[in-house]
Image (cartoon, rainbow, N blue to C red; front, side, top):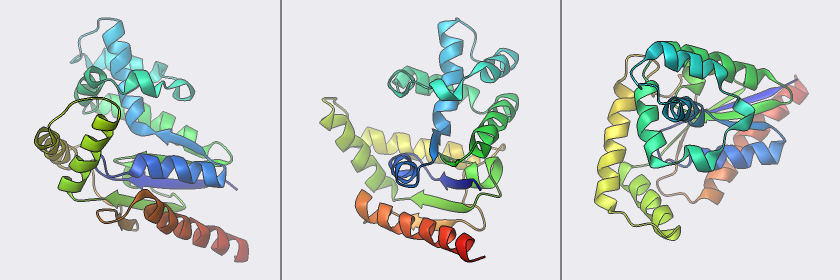
Length: 214
């Protein structure tokens, strides 16, 4: 029987790292759903299509191969900016949600992380986590990542960007970012990744144990 774990949370909360580690530990597939929207934007950009063309964006969404998402390419800043424009389109969201649900349903199951997994994509997931941290801590982490990779950035600028993204994600009409009613809240403001991973693993183990005894 497949196991589906839904992880939601704001930008730079650590949900992606947590999702990848849980998928590896429990032998599940992993999908960063944010990359699926970036993949749509990337297709639009390389074909020179206007980013406000919802019909073209929907076509691009249906052509995206979830098994061939190149994180290095899709993580580029310009792709992210373009993705923020196509991600608000209802037809794009519906097309990608269909693909994300198919991915989740494929044995042996999956860990999906994003902003509407527990509420929209997989409302019947076996376990739902909402991973968060203070905006200041998320900005500090993102700044540290950039510096560690040789980049240059102002932490204040990152903080302002994170707050803008939070406002946009939580305030959008279609699939806003919010915890599912039955999600477990994991506030990582004062946790390192190991502590967060132990806490999340404990919740997964409880789900697996309950299945075994039922």
